[in-house]
Length: 187
Image (cartoon, rainbow, N blue to C red; front, side):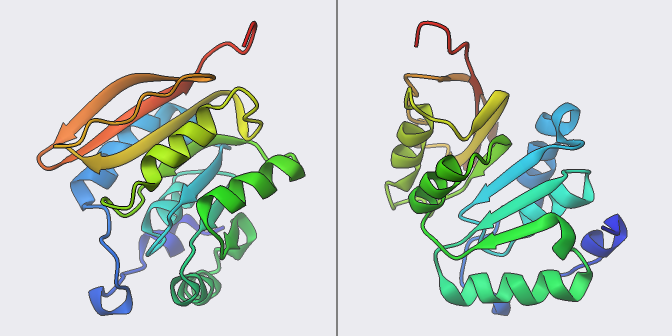
């Protein structure tokens, strides 16, 4: 993939009816995962505009799975990625995050980095963390990280099982919470 191709894409607000991750938060996210991104398999759950996944590709992720439940947005992502020559590293799923994770587990697809940014008031963050933290979670590679974006006023959910909440990074009204895979021995 031509890294410059993804870096030069400009998304217009009118193209999408979602709340995109603020540029300062996006920059912080990639500062957090910088040592892990090169060659990583990256899941952009709740992909929306696709900006996070495209930046992951431009920073060296080997494969990015864009998961978006809204058909219009998924189709827009397909067109956008086709237009920038990024398709060789991108896989787009028009599905709910939970359905995609189930399919990925059955297919043996493991993520090194997962980014979660569901609609804030949906309750989906809690469900996704619970699913990912489950003892039988098989979509997390050893040493994987999960980063959840959520409103600062709401605490990130706990993650019993194979995930451990490590740190919260606050940026005004937005917080990024980092979870890491813990040893699976005895779990």
